[in-house]
Length: 560
Ligand code: ATP
Ligand code: MG
Image 1 (cartoon, rainbow, N blue to C red):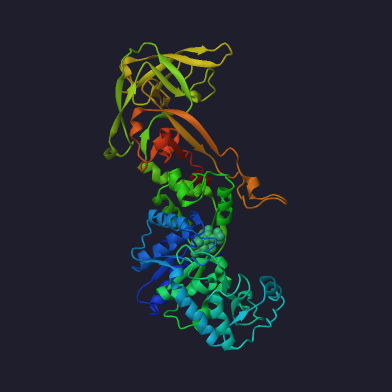
Image 2 (tube, rainbow, N blue to C red):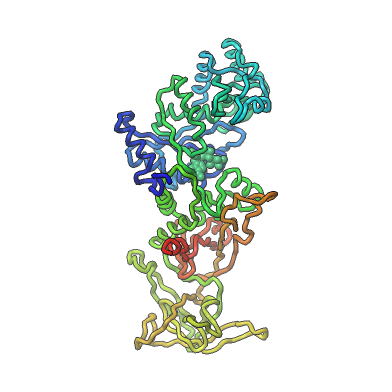
C-alpha cells in the first residue's frame, strides 16, 4: 500500500511534497505547471484529472498554469480538436491567461538543438527502415545492435539532416537518431528516433516542414523553454524519464524541469483511450464526440454535468502512484451532490396515465410551488391544476402490494402543491388495459394542506393534461454493460461490450414553467431525476437529457 493513497488532488499528496521540498531547497521562485494535450481528439474525464492537478497546483502555489498543445504529429491533428480542447479546459475553470503555447512554435529551436546534438557527436542520420530498426533494437533481455550508419561523420550527418529538412528524401527514407547506447537496459535509451520525415500539412505550420520531431524530443524541451518547474504526467512516461533527463543534460536548455508521474484515471463502465473513443465516433456507435453517453468533457457537459461536480470528483479521487479503477458511482455521487443544490424543481410526467377529477370545474386553478425546497432565494412558480391531469402510470396500482401508499381504488393521495384526491373508478379498454382513472378531490385540501389533520401517506407529482407541454426526453444508461469494457474475451473487442439499450427517447408532459428553460439551467424533475435542456432543442422542440437518476447507489454502498 502506497502512503499517498486517498489524498485528494488539492490537499497534501506526494506531488505537492516534492514541490514543497524543491521550494525549501530554493530551487524555484515560482511554480509553473502545464497541461499538454495532443490535439488529436476530444478531452475526456481522465484529462480532467490531469487538468485539475496541474491547474490546482499552480493556483495554490500562486504560480503559472500553461496550456500547451503538443502538436508534433501533423497527420492525426486538427484545429477542430484545438478549439474543442480550449473550450473544455476553460469550462472546467482552468484559466491559462496569456499562457497558451504550441510545441509547433518551437520547431525552429528544436531543429537547432538537433543540430547541436549532431555537432557534439550525439545524433546521427540513419537509413535503416522502421522494420530494420525494430529488429535491431533488441529486447528486455537482449541488447540491441548498432546501426551500420551509426558512425557517420559529423559533417555527413549535418549535410544529410539539412537535406532531410529541405525535402530531398521520401517519407521513411531516413531518420535522425540520438547516439546513446544500443545496449542500455532501458529500451527508450537505445538510440531513440528524434526526427522523422513526413511530407504532411500541419494545422499550424502548413507546409513549412517535412520533418517533425518525435514526441519525446519535443516534450521536455518545450517544458524547458516555458520554464515549467514540474512536468506532471501519467505513469506510462516513467520509463521515458531517463530520456527526458538526457535531453535536458545534453542540450543548452534554459531550465531543468522535473518530471513526476502519477496513475491515470480509470473508471468502471468506461473506455478512456482516445483511439477507442475515436472509433466509437467514426463507426457511429454514438452520435459524435459530445454524445451524452461519452466520457468526453463535451459529452459530460451536454449530459448536464457541472464543472464543480467534476472538480469535486477529481479532488476526492486524489493523486497516487498506483493504478486503480474508480467506481463510476463516485462521479455520479459528486454530480448529485452539486445538482441537489443547484437544480430548479419542476414536475414532469414521463409515463402518463390520465386522471379525471370528476368534481372539479372546467376552470384552471394555479398553485404556487417553490423552485427549490430549501433555497427561498430561487423563488417560486405557479402550477396549473385542471379537471384532467396526468400522473405516472406506476404511481397507481389497481391491487396494491403491501407498503404501496400511492394511488389505488379508494385511497387518498396528495397532489404535490395542489390538493388531495381519492381514486373512485378505474376505466378499462376491452383488452383490460387501464385507460384512465376517475377521482374526486377534497375542496378543503386546496394548497395541499390537510383540512382536519388526516393522514395521507402518499404524495405524487402530476401535470395538467390541458396546460402541459409535451417534451422529448432522452434517457441514458451506461454505454457499456461491462464494468471493465476494455476486457473482452478471445476474438471479441470492447465494441462487443456496448450496451445497445443505452438511449431511450420518450415523450413526456411538463408543467408550463419548463418552457422557459435555458441551456445553462439544471433541473430536477421531481421524483424522476436531474435533467437539462439539450442543444438540439432549437430545431426540434424542447428536448431534455436525463443527467442522472435520483438514486444514489454509491453513498449507500459506502455505508454498508
Ligand atoms: P491516449 O489515450 O492515446 O494515451 P492521451 O489521452 O494520453 O492519449 P494526451 O493528449 O497526450 O492524450 O494527454 C494529455 C495529458 O493528459 C497527458 O499529460 C496525459 O498524461 C494526461 N492524461 C491522459 N489520460 C489520462 C487519464 N486517464 N488520467 C489522467 N491523466 C491523463
Ligand atoms: Mg498520451
